Image 1: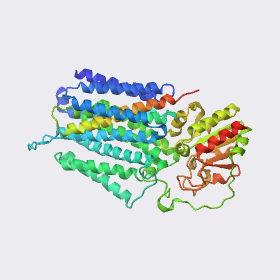
Image 2: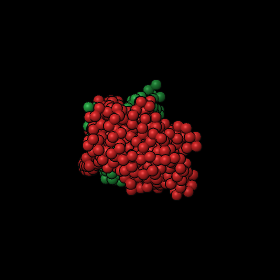
Image 3: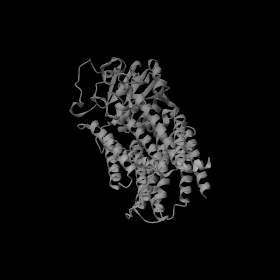
Image 4: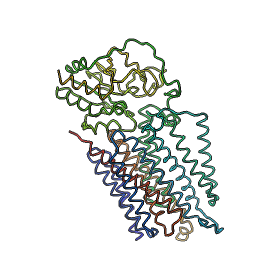
Length: 470
Length: 102
């Protein structure tokens, strides 16, 4: 039986690898997800047959309750709520790792529940693995829940700063490491194990709280990576290769996504983790002073409809504003009307647009926009000079030309979509307010820029109707 | 040799785990580098579901012979991990169903 179980774990690990591989291409992604799910089912069945599993009632209750909650969440969540859903699921994975590490500690402690005064010999590697699982799992759990709260609007999405935040967090981390070292040497220190768990949970809250809304793509992918690494460390605790493999795969993929997101903002991981652009939306200085740089020209839906009637190529740049207004279906209707008139319409997606990696792609897929119309920044940026009209919907900092030339700008060096090179730029926004970086966007004052004010959903619907009426 | 291995069994097992971990990290990096941005979210939620593999450890704790604090921790861990696994795979599939090329 032992060999059969181990072989099942091996096959399951291979299915995870194939699953992730197939998730990398749109044509095979669904199959990949299915392979991974089958791998998980195999791992669960194999574990149920393990000789150490002697009672089933609690397992069955847990599986039923967890599956029910998971199913309900997966069915009920609207596509616009996907970032918080991913954040929350991440948290549960990390929480499970912490709980398993704690359970394992109590299981191998000979003096629990009754202190028999026996010596507690904890192998060094297992001790270290338990402490790391408590730390990483705990940070992932509470960190993800704070990320969930921020995305759901329950916790402030702003860059939250508190006095001595970095020294204090560092102190907590050092305390966990010191406490962990003590536990590894003196495993009987049960109170200290609980203290380590508590401090790790606190650390998760304090580390994610300062991260602002627009930096969430980085935070979410980093937490995703942590949840994988926590799985791996739990694998070291249990001496189970499959957990080590699966956790490492997820840890690696999360790190890669994190780095892609950081590159999309031209910032180091440290800079993001330590709490945002120097002055970004922090405290009372959030509203930048408005300096007059020229006139802002605005356009109404009727004029805009006439303008679009005579063009041949349009590039749409969606941002978080489109998600907030839930305007993806209205945008799809606009695309259909324009295409009927023979206009070539494409989408330009900035890597950090929205609140998680690929956020805009998911929303547009929901609105049934074909994914071959969606272009990554590097694939479309050279086409803007040949584009008649670029329509920016709810994006701001990622189209600010200051990033290219203004060395004093906080976003200087960030790769941007060069919408200003298009013949005409239409910017749909509710107002002239600053974006996440807290700076004014000089694009609005460019001679080829036209502001089209209004809530994205209403404004785009109105525009579509005007074009139809022409 | 056999004697040497048996006296150092723990070290050998640990080293084997480290090997597995290192190699899996490299496999992970190789697998992900070329994923198109369109699939970033499904990749994240799908791999997220895979990290629910801690369900294995959770089951081992919840299925102990005697009811102890480990059983309770294991039970909660099973619930958490199953939310992660079932929610993750289902929501990924829901998303991927929408990704169409016309």
